[in-house]
Structure formats: C-alpha cells, structure tokens
Image 1 (cartoon, rainbow, N blue to C red):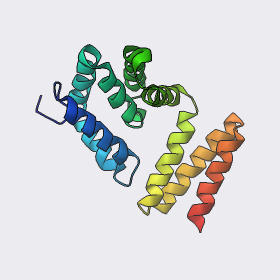
Image 2: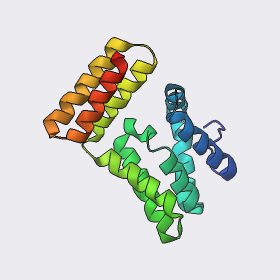
Image 3: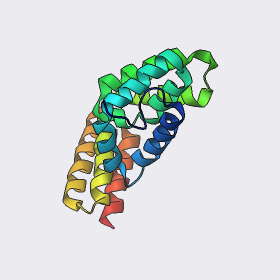
Image 4: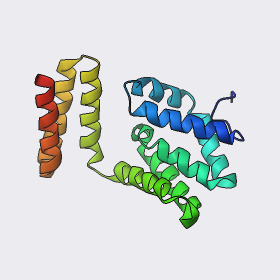
Length: 165
C-alpha cells in the first residue's frame, strides 16, 4: 500500500483527513472526495483497523465522519460504524457516538434509498443536469409514496419545485 494521510500510525493526519473528507462529502466537492476515498479504501480500512487496536476514539471519529461515504458500501459501513461504537464504549464523547450511531441507522434504514435518490438529484441539479435531477427526484418521490411517508414526500416535492424556479 502506498503512504497516504490515512495510513496506520498517522493518528493526527488521519483525524485531520477524516474531518476534511467529512466536510468535502457535504459540499460541491462530494464527487471528488468520493473518488479520493474509493481510491484510498485500503488505507482507510487499515486506519480503521489500527484505530480498533490502538485508538478507539480515532476509529469512532473517522468512521462517523465518513458515514456518508459508506452509502456506496452500506454493509461494510455498518460494520465499521458498529465496531467503532462498540470500541469507543461509554468513554467516547457523546457527539462522536451519536454521529456514528446516526450513520449506522441511516445505512440500515430502508428509507436510505429514498434519501440517497434525493441526494443524487441534488448533485445532478448542482451540476446543471436538470433532466437527470428531475428523474432522480421522481424516483425518490415514488419511493416515499410507496412507503406512505409524507414528510420526505413533501421534502422531495419542495426540491422538485425549487429546481423548477
């Protein structure tokens, strides 16, 4: 494996890299960050494994910061998030545990499908691919309606209307 900011034994840079990636995953640079994380997945796994053995808080911080990345690897993501919460125990900061647990819940929730479709619509809309955004919002809306979920149904309508303006 090549050296990366996420390599085992580089605790400060792993923490910094996780924080940067988390911010990037919630920005217009999401695609760039997803590609970076995907390319460095082996080192990411190594850093999480190292954290499990040597620094449970780092593992919890890193796994929780990257919960949105785990949408493309939901089974593995749930595993890392669960391990991180278990390793952190009650000594870990509550905010870190809450973030990891929320990510774990989102990945295991069948509604994640609807959320993910809506987020993909947001990305397509931000890139100016309006027809694709509309199709993704429609898929999200169909999902929410099939679940009888009115709150997310309304959020999707709002996103569709916002993009029509």
